[in-house]
Length: 129
Image (cartoon, rainbow, N blue to C red; front, side):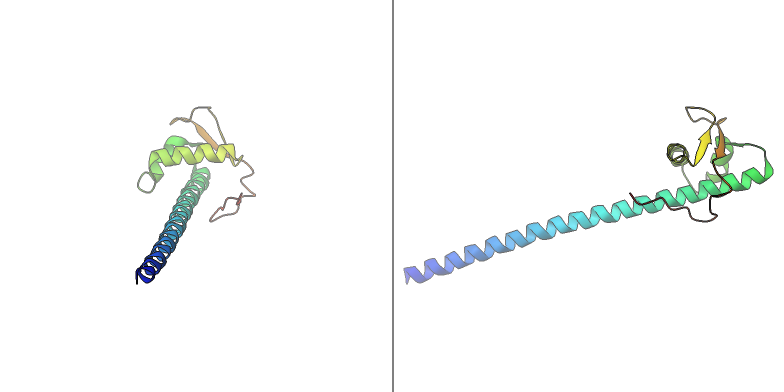
């Protein structure tokens, strides 16, 4: 009888270990899925901000000879926080999509699209790296 109880307890221990392993694997998979979802959401927000910025630069360019950061921020204030506009302008400068007249972005900084005639209208998607 003791041998049978010991065998049952041993099987129970093995089953518990397997359940713990599965729980650990599921937790890891869930963490990866959440991280991937967050990354996708971040990329979508960045693309949306970029789309807003490009659209406003094109609109402003039709009416004024130069586009200033202050003009962009003013037009986008209800859609995008100032910090995000500035971050996107800096990112776009780094990617070579636009030029900024000053190293440090400020209200009077002039924004110029590089190769603006070749940039497609609508959503601009970054190359997946």
